[in-house]
Image 1: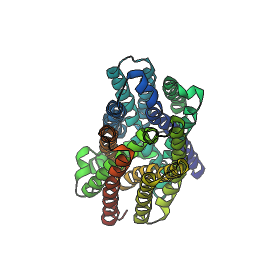
Image 2: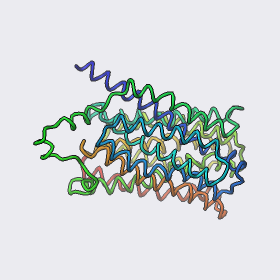
Image 3: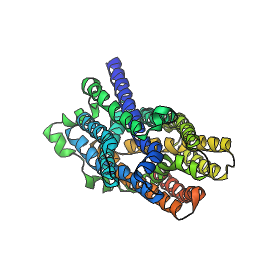
Image 4: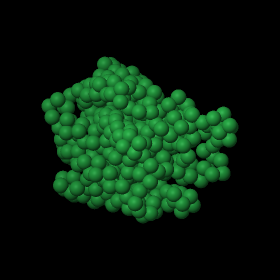
Length: 401
């Protein structure tokens, strides 16, 4: 029985990791392809910020709907459909011929991505024992920076120089993975247990709903997680969307920006795994102080770097904590909510975070257009990190997770 459970856990986390790699490719595609898209469509920095945010805006309804449906019809079904949606509309990106149609297909691709992410988190966390949830979510989530790092390497090649090839890659890969999910991905045992309860048990412990996130047990954790998700994802997506362009803004080449993005994502992979393991072993307050302190150090290093090598080192430092922090937040969401509202809770928190993620690139674009430069964008991110850290410290102090 134990061997069967271990096999179930390994298969679930491995397939979720693979899908996260593909999501990382797709999310990073916009930032990598930005220079080519700007040239093809004649966009300025402000319009480019809107382009970045169109895909992120789509994450919002995807996360809202995906989590709710996953609690009702199953994690596996919704994940497969979400993956199919972002695959199709990522491919459509290469065939549009106007700025407005570009925004529409990026929004719809984002909706698929948004539906998939909270389910990946829920599946990974429910595949293991509660004491290993932080590690499982961290391992799964590190697939995203792995995918983004792979795309950064592709971007430095002749193949990746054509922005359309980037989206071909991001759209075709999930199409090949969908049959694997259908054949091998097991449904969550926690979900199946909830579905197999007797009528009396269901009456005593009804299916969770949106309003349950604000009952006396969940109100504080919901508010703290929402605020932290909002501001943390704002900074995450400023970095994901604008980092290569910020390098060019500072006078470096497109290849320099892609190389910096690669270092950012390589250390993000390492940071995500380590922070996920520490979440299960350390006091949660120590993990929060480490990861948000690391983000602040990375942002300050980016602002203070004066040479290309220093910029590479600063990007690596920022990546280790910025992306790793997002993975830890997802793990926290899966830890603090009970099974009946776990997917809904993580989905709603993800949706709120996506609002911040959507606003971040737009605000960065406006700051650049207004002449504040890369330093102004990075400086504006610092208060967001401080607010997020304070809310998470309140959460762990009051809820004793």
